[in-house]
Image (tube, rainbow, N blue to C red; front, side):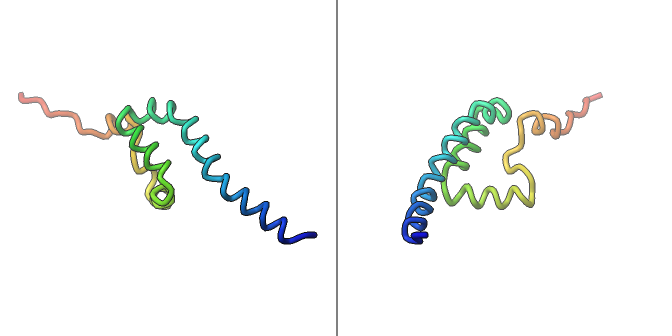
Length: 85
């Protein structure tokens, strides 16, 4: 087995991985925008595309849950206004 060729193949594969990640992020973009709303959806997509920020966001979301909540979760968590009567 030629270790140099194997190492070269692995290195080429690792260089392609971010591109594959971008394809998945952009393919999921319409669903994210529908779920989170336009501005928060675009923000979530941009944070996922940025390389280092994406890793930090993923690490935070592992422990705390979704950093940018879905639109329906934001609407249901707001307190109802009190009546003036």
